[in-house]
Structure formats: structure tokens, C-alpha cells
Length: 171
Image (cartoon, rainbow, N blue to C red):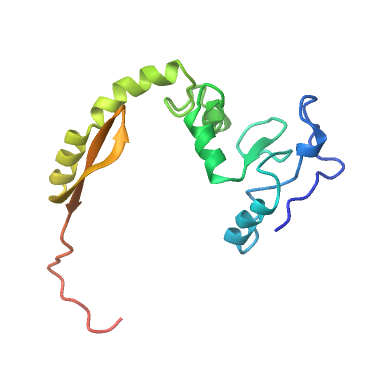
């Protein structure tokens, strides 16, 4: 799929966006019946471009499209530079006046939500939650991740697929 230049009659662009960074791409209707190929086609174009097509609920002039994984990681890793507020537009579209904290919160508010929620999803609590659903620890990957300045382990858990129903002989 080729990313196209905007057509006449498309949404007016904000004045600060350079014309050479504008391409039309529609995630809702522009993927056709081969979405993987359409998304891969983004790699043939610029790393970052502005699409006048609105990709989320609500009004607005369009959105920036980031087409390379390393750039996506950078954007997601720098919430002070790149806003998350657009996430709450769904709630507004259905008539709610609240957002979806912490998803639609930018710093410093996001940090306040995160500090409360993080304790609820600690490694110890996640192991206990999985155990409550019949999962059992089967191994530990030592020092496989780096988080908050230190190496952390990953616990592997498993739940058997046993069933009281007989295994079908034919499908």
C-alpha cells in the first residue's frame, strides 16, 4: 500500500505542519482485506508523517503516524513530550464527561495514578492471583528484565489443560 498525499476537500491542516510531512492514511478503512501488507507499506514512506484522517473518536485535524518500531518506542517512552489525552475521547463520544485514568493522563498526574496502581500489580500479587486460578510456578528466568534500575526475574506459571470431558476422536 502506498501512502498518498491528501486530496482536495480533506480536513484543513494546522498551520504549523509542513506540507511535505502530510500523507493520507486511514487505519479504519484504508487497510483493505490485507491489513498486514497495508501496515508494512508504511515502511516505504516517511518515518513520521501527519495524516489529516482522524484515527480516534472526536473532532480534530488528524494525527501523527509513526511508522517505525524504534520511533514508536521513543514516543511511548516519553509521555512528557507526547500526550496521551486522546485516549479519553471514547468516553466523551458516548456522553461521559470523565476520562479513562490513567490511560488518558499526562505527567505529572499519570505518575500519581501509577504509584497507586503499581502496588496492586506487584509481582507477588500477580503470582498469588494466578495461583488462585489454578496456575502453579514451573520455573524462574533469573535477571531477564531490567526495571527501576535493577535486574528482575520472570516467574513462569502453568495451568494444566486436563478436563473431565473425553478427548474427541475426530474434529
